[in-house]
Amino acid sequence: MFNETLQKYSFLKDLGIEEVNSGACSGVDTWLPTEGRDLLESISPIDGSVIAKVALATSEDYENVIKAAQEEFQTWQMIPAPKRGLIIRDFGDELRKYKDALGQLITLEMGKIVAEGKGEVQEAIDISDFAVGLSRQLYGLTMKSERVKHRMFEQYHPLGVVGIITSFNFPVAVWSWNSMIAAVTGDTMVWKPSSQTPLCAIAVQKIANRVMKRHGLKSVFTLVIGRGSEVGEKLLNDRRVPLISATGSTRMGVRVAEVVGKRLGRTILELGGNNAIILMEDANLDLAIRAILFGAVGTAGQRCTTTRRIIVQRSILKEVEERLIKAYKQVTIGDPLDPHTVMGPVVSQQAIKDMLDAINALPPQGGKLIHGGERVNRKGFYITPAIAEAPGNIQMVCTETFAPLLYIIPFDTIDEAIELHNGVPQGLSSAIFTDSVKYSERFLSTIGSDCGIANVNIGTSGAEIGGAFGGHKDTGNGGVEAGSDAWKQYMKRQTSTINWSDELPLAQGIKFGE
View 1: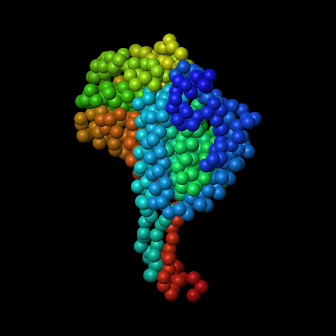
View 2: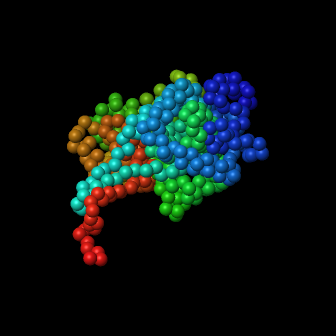
View 3: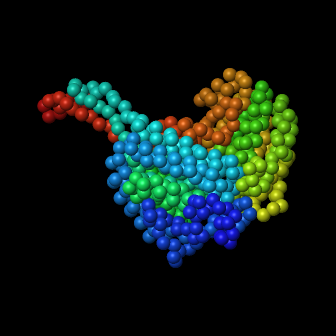
């Protein structure tokens, strides 16, 4: 099976993927042995075939990995940040060399179309470039002291070993959001990727190893692929890991928050999304339909920023439905490695079941399917994207179905639209299409969208790395990744005061022992 796969997909050889790969790497040239371990099959959603097998890490492997990351932290934190930035620049250049191969591997293992797979690698390259500039901008404030001949300022120091838990839908980009920023701030990392995309993680780790070896470093980046009940729980409970950044379901995030919070550790949680676009009657529908199509169908509806609801002013409801159905009928579904394909498979058979269950639950709750939602007769995990009419207050609209299922919800007034928009537990990404300054400003105001991301006349999906990425409510705990000042979460703040006088005045004018 593997030899046939290797011949068919030569980029696997370019990336150094072997038939049985070790699921644990404690740094450069330190892949742990594979013998005697349980094996994890990497299954391609394109045709349901086994691509390769990965030897799962054990608790003992985890200990080796965490100790290596701890030891390397002592060296890495003492390298000046701008020089760390130069090393990350080399990492970005190495990603450029393997952009096509790694993008195709993402497509093969996860199922997103090849343009999106390569785009995800480009996102990792972009965040690498961002981190290089950031390495010279880890600023702290200087404050005026109330005491004579005193200087007061703040500075930031690295945290230590950072744990990164990623999901299947962005197996490279989300790791890079965390790892590139953490690296330039002086942290080392332990990465636990999704068990559905282990080969992507191994390929990235091998790229990282080559870069670090050139610079005489060992364990800045480490990897552990194992069961959540074994390796995952050890990572969450480990006091040697002061920060866990986790991407996944809300249910998973609650578990992470409980365990890490109990030991007073930090968390960055990027969880479920139930993103909506409001269409006012003055919206530019040419723009809006394109944005909805990409937002709802892109990555087969498996982005955290996927458009799952459109809230449409009643006067344009019929036209929007007609235009959307026409656009959906033009979506080509098939092999995501074919550049002409618009939508590939979902990640698993379970994802299809979840979507069909949601569709079947529509009629009893007053909704109805108006397009799509049918299995595609071919090997792999394919289903046509679906559009459904739904009342805005039914329970199923409040639940995220991680598949290409779009709900259309009518409204009459802007107040009603925003109430419908905010009336779900999640709060990640949002958008409004309107030519009205009044409506757009209302949407962006404190009484508008309650999401971490709010857009006007662009869709919910496709965030740029320069801005902070994160959400509120069930989407997370307010932590953010990528740009802006997200770097501060990977460091510890220290307020310092220097007395350069010959006196010892106390703050607040307190007199003590005089």
